Image 1: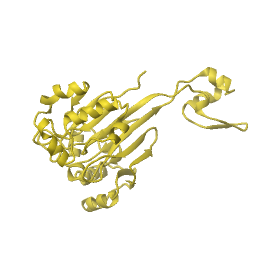
Image 2: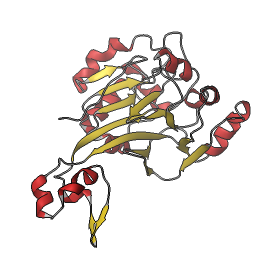
Image 3: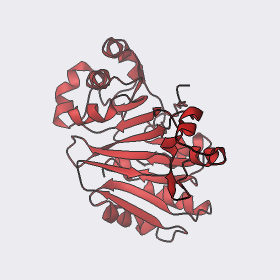
Image 4: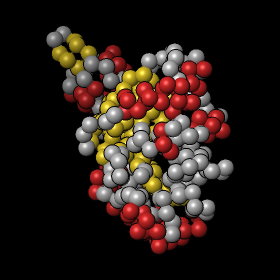
Length: 297
């Protein structure tokens, strides 16, 4: 979590943004004012960021983009950058680029036009899903599949020569004497992979619960910790801590981090005892919170 604040940055809380790193790839979700400073506070460079996903186009989620793009350019980046966002993302980003026009790398856009959209990358995928805010807004799941274990008996049953085993385990498809050899011919059943789901600026909805199901980490908006703010949350299409916890419980996630706090919410941790009664493994995340997710075995 690079930042956990909503609406405006505070001296001790940057705007909501998340960075995920997997196998050499870096995925940034949202880029509000100050995101590149939060990144530098972690000691990380913007250069490896391959993909930037935007939940929606409110300023606290996108106004840090021009500075981030310039920082990328100043780091001598040349590889293309992919930007994903709701319909209109090209026009919004190109407008912001008025002050970041000359960049040494290409920007490729993926515009989300449906209720759900899956984008495949090398070794992982991003699933975008519509949520319920007062403008078009998406949540995102980052999913990493894990192949089954190598099964030498299965390989022998399928008459796969030993010289092909290593290549097939790496996912290569091989043609041998008129036969097409594939990875599934030498592996057992698929094992549990990894999944992180991120959503913010939304009312609770079944779409979030469905897409968060089984997540190792569910990062969810908690705009208000005060129970008497429920009507305000409904009016502005945001969520309370307790509504987020209820969705985490329904989705049966392993862990939930709250984020996107109201600027008036000075001490989120004060409310966590009540939140944990709904979902025990809930955490009031702070800026810079980091978690390494590992395969189960």
